[in-house]
Length: 113
Length: 113
Image 1 (cartoon, each protein chain N blue to C red):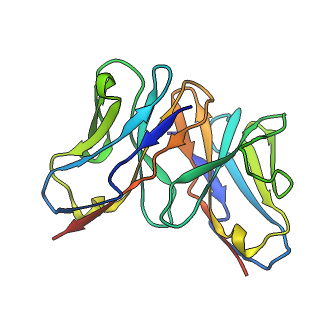
Image 2: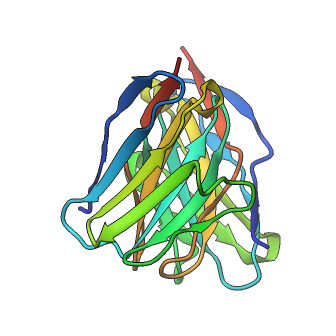
């Protein structure tokens, strides 16, 4: 069965500092990997996704993620965070087409001035 | 881009009544939709997968008679919480599957009093 682990429940970083959110997955085949962001009381917004090809994926809002098959990881990075990046971040794994997504438990990001 | 419209965004109902939540794909046809439930500060838990024109597939532990899902057209899926109780209070989110990913609705905050 597929699973996603986000080991960091809560991360606090200073505005302007770099960020890395960790994600490890377990999946029997080639995974489709996603990062979503959720603001309080809101739905999910897709930051980026990986299906195949270049393992370094660029997303919206200056985020990027790198797929490392050998480590079963898909960590999310941003070189310089902004106060507006404070939110909950979810990593998810799925398969092609109409397969369901499995979500990690999320990482809450707090930004301090 | 693809948009899934979810309504209502918030609803308060009395115990014992039923509540219907709608998700519409606005500019594409959604053969498959997923319904998730999210508890406060928790991840998204898949409740069921609905396919247009057929019965929904429920995840283990989800009461199919309490959470009725209908996917009668390629652009509309509904979730009806029947005989609602306070423990059904939660954030419900729908998602439509597409060939290259998933589009989420903005969520419905259900409060049962």
